[in-house]
Image (cartoon, rainbow, N blue to C red; front, side, top):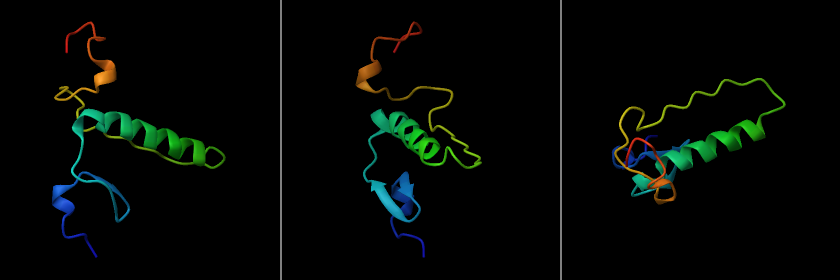
Length: 74
C-alpha cells in the first residue's frame, strides 16, 4: 500500500520514510553513503547497483562541506 505522503518526500527505503522534509543540501552525500553501505553489505555476492543522482547536470544545492572547493564556481 503506497504511503499517502509519498509525493512530498524524496527519501524512502522500501516503504519507510527516511527524511521528510528533504534536506537538499545533503542529498547527494546521503545517496553516496547509502550506496557505499549497500556495496559493503553485499560485497560477497553478485549485485547490480544503479545510482541516479537528483542533481546530475546542474548543481542546484551544495553541501556546506564542499563550498568554495570547486574550480568551476559554486
